[in-house]
Length: 204
Image (cartoon, rainbow, N blue to C red; front, side):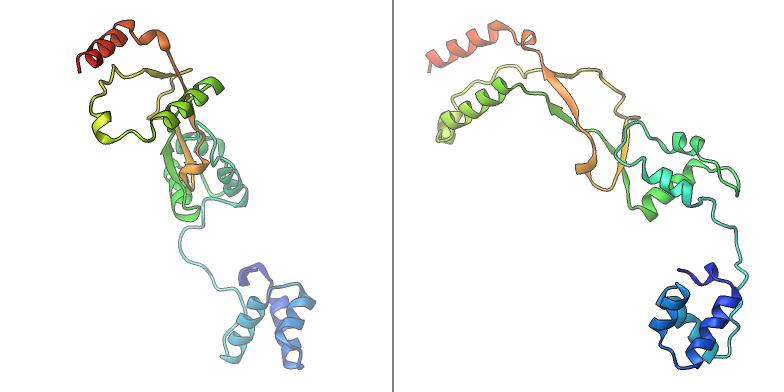
């Protein structure tokens, strides 16, 4: 625990126990404090420094322990902008701004705001078909692939398309960001494309 978390009485008691010959580990265990705190108090005593808590300068921190827990729980959840998080927080030291939330997420938690990436929503049949295609053509040479005429690109869309600019997810890595499932619409693929492919291949 930090020095300021203990009163002067505890610190003085710790110094007295150390002067009587007890080890720092024993004193820390007896007083239920950290060894680091005991070492700090003993060092201050030997240097002739006061054991009283020093008055801290500057503005006190806005975010308290509860605020930090709430912010941490927003990681990997959708639609959690810094402004929305700030509106839910109440601090005894004043209103919480969205920039305070941003600084805590980036500097303390080392998180970033990621856009959700698209992932095709494939049925088991689609997956098997792709695997079969890959196995069938895995030994094709570059010269053979040059003779293939590719049709128009297949269309992929979302079930419910969100605004990807606003749909940010705060996380430490992209692996923690939930994906956006997308589906393939076969009706967008025109049958005329197949005819052109067959015509081209027959003319080679």
